[in-house]
Structures are given as C-alpha cells and as structure tokens.
Image 1 (spheres, rainbow, N blue to C red):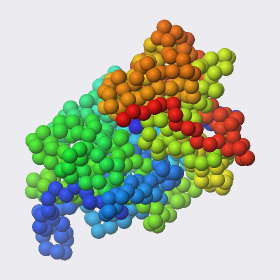
Image 2 (image 1 turned 135 degrees about the vertical axis):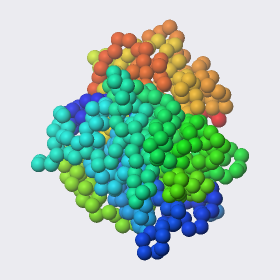
Image 3 (image 1 turned 90 degrees about the vertical axis):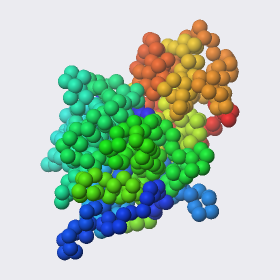
Image 4 (image 1 turned 90 degrees about the horizontal axis):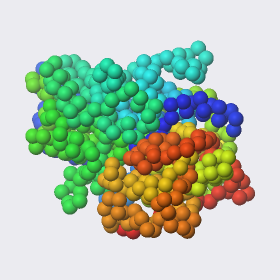
Length: 601
C-alpha cells in the first residue's frame, strides 16, 4: 500500500526514543487420476507429480499478531452472515505452513513482496532484521520485492539479502552478525539506471528430484510514486508484463517449462471475505484492479500468478492471452492468510497441467499451537526493544481506528492531522493553517486493550510507532488556494481515479465528497471551507504534511508544488507530543468525530 518511508529514519528513531480454516477456492477441473507421485517402493513414479505451492504476501514485519481490526479477516458463514476471525502472527503462520506441508513431499513456499517495511517497532526498530530471521525460520523459498523493500534504498535491500550489520547502528546483538535472507529476493523489473542491470536476481529455479519450477519476481511499475525519492534513487522500474514475458521466454529456452510469477501488484475482489468464490458468475462478481490487465497480458508460458500489494484475499481465475483460465491468488496481509495451490507437474512435458491447478486460501487462526522457535525469536527481540517500546505516551478511552477503518475519513487520520497542525501552527514552527495526512501512511489502529503490561487505554511508544513507523520529517509549505483545491481533486482523479486516496484533514477543513460523480468532480469545489470560509484561489496558505506528500507522492502533484518550505519535527514526535498534551489517565483522549468530509453516495 501507499507508504511514507524515510532513508535515515533509524537514526532519528533512536534519537527520538532516547530523548522522549479452508475456503471454497476456485477449482478449475477435477484432478487427473494418479496425480500423486507414488515414489520409490510403490512401483514406477507416475507421470505427474503434485507440487504444493504455499504463498503469502504483505507481511510488513508483523511478527506479533496484529492488534485490533487490523488483526482480523472476514469470513462468510453458510447463512450469508460475515464473521470477523482473529488471525496472524508468525508463531501461528509457522505452525500453519508446517502443518500444511505434512504429507506433501514436493512443497515450495513463495511470497509476493512487502515482507518488510512499514513494520511495527519490534521489527522496524532493528531495520527488519527480526523479520528476515523469522522468514528464514519459516523456510521461505523465494519472494518478489515489493515497494516497501525500497523504503531505505537499494543498498539497505542488498544488506537484507546478503547480510552484514547496519552501516550506522552496527550489530544489535553482541557477538552476532546479521546473516541476511537465505532465500532469494527477486527484482526482475528493477534495474540500475547507470548499468541497466537488475538490482537483484530476476528469477530463480526451484528443483527437486528432477521437478523444476521457475519463479520470476516483479514489483509494481509505479513504485517510485509511492516511495520517497531517496528510496528509489538511481533505480528504474519497468513494465510488469514486458518484464515477466521476457524472463519467461528465457526460462523456457533453458528448459524450464513450469513458471510462477510473483507480482507485487494486486486487485480488489467483489467481497472482502477470504472465502469468497471469486469465480462466481453473478453480476458484479470477480476481481477488478491493475492485476486483471497484467494477468491478461502475461504469456501463457506462466502457469500461476501470486500477487499482493492491495492487502486483499482472493483466489481467482483470469484468462491468459490465449483465453485459457489461469490462477491468480493473494493472501490478505500481515500473515493472516496463506494460499495453498496444487500445481500438477508433468514429468514428460516438464510443464504444469493447467486444467488441474487448484487453490484455496486458509486463515492463519490463533487457536492452533504457537511455533516455539518463533515465540523465542519474538521474546529475544522484545527484550532488546522493551526499554523504548514500553514507554507510555498518552491515554485513550476506546479504540481509535485507522488502518482498520474502511471509511474515507478515519478517526485516527483526524487525530494524526490534528497533531500535525497543532505542532506546526506556531509562527516559529511553520505557521501552518491546515494539515494533510496520506491514508497509506496510517499502518494500524490505536487499540484500547493493553498490548503488554502497560494497562488498558495506555498508548506506548511501540504502539504509536506501529501507527506511524516511517518517522517522516514534517514540512510546512506555501500553497495557493487553487493548488489546495487541485490537491483535493487529485484524491479522486488522475492516477487515483480508479482507487481514490482520501487525505486525512485537520480540524477546520470541510468539504463534500460526492461519490455519485466521476473524476475530479467528486470533490465538490464550492463546498471546500477552511474554518468556515471558502478557499480563495489567489490566497497563499501554509500547509503541513509529511515529506512524502510534500514530494508529490501518491499522485498528489499539486502538493509537490509548495514553496518556502520549513522542515519541522518528525510525524511520530508530533503525534506523541499531542497524546501527551491532550490526555491523562483520568482524562483519556476519546476517538475524534468524523465530520469533516460529507460523503454523498
């Protein structure tokens, strides 16, 4: 999802801390008789072998079970009602994957990107070394890069792959050097501008007993629009279809006929339930979004697509260019779901029998045993993080939903924008009159229930960090009224037309969002008011936002046109200062009302 990374966030972070169940998946056809490999001792091996492909995506360093609504998946019941099921956490993900592998001698585990980045403090404080260590323990075989793998730039990504202690902060545990990922990160469509060569391997081939499956990994071509300039400096991102087709041809020439594409781009199924039948023929059913056109353009040489980025769960078939159905899957986010796909491998043709491919999503439920090695890993890193993570920052009276809210205006978005405005309104701090927060930068909810021993309603530094893990520096800039109006219209037009990105706005800014209209007209220009007054197109306004938005990120080109920039404190510092100033144990902060954007639908 959209994000707001910052290259040297770690240095600031440390300084700041010191100072202050199975689905009814798509089943394309019945399995052919004798599909299982009978193996030695049972006569000759059969012509076909069932290869189990386990996959997940968008873990984002969520080693512990995600809190609040961000830690649930929707499940449609037999009577049509929808139930929320608590899910996720690597202790349970490890158990789920290990249980699924039992009885499957040919099993490969792949991921669709964003394994790291925008991570909770337990992983983020240590530049995601804990997550790479956990993925090694999960026996991940391969992953594509996602946009978040570039949050701290290509050099840091290479360190996560190859190992070595952090260049600034060094080694976190005495006598232990970070080993790096023991699985390949694939980045077929990301090249160095100077050399034209891929920054990491474009593909890898998984082999067992003569069975060979090629994996090609790509991230979305639009990564530079959703990562700060520092993160993608010196890199070029190429078209997903062209890249996958190029390397599929290369693998085919090398005799690798079975190919899976790992694509960090996704879609939106008609239902958010993980067990939705994506191939249901009903009107409005199925899947929409960028992955549909990508899937339709990728060569039939590719047998299945593992996708991500949109944090949705789906198992769909989308026709390839020859018109044949092909499996396209995604497993929600944060380790809450995994996909189990059966690929029937024909030893004679060395290809997948596409009509036999079947797939289903499964919940990583929390009512199973925890994996002891993951529990130990979490405990070890929590001990290192505890002095910073447990420090109280403020108090809340109830859950304040951010990531878990599906509404355009989110209570936690309002709280963050208000914190930014208050911190940057004084004349010597920037003189801001309004603040904007990008929705993708809100990574979780603020949850009332205690996450540790701090007590209910206490917001710890770790919890605040999990909400805003990028430690972006705040900017205050001059924008004209006309530019302000254009920026609000860019929420629902241009690159955001198909999937609107609704900015969270500070108190005092109000307008109407008419979803019955299309494009820029959805923002009703003559309803935009600041403290009750209409926006004057010719007047100059001081506007606060994080440096990602101030750089025109997420398709907000108008916000990138600001002048007279003043760089303020980090977003996390302002958020924590606001919590401290506006809440006590006796007078906790209540969730703010969501009455700034009037929605017409």
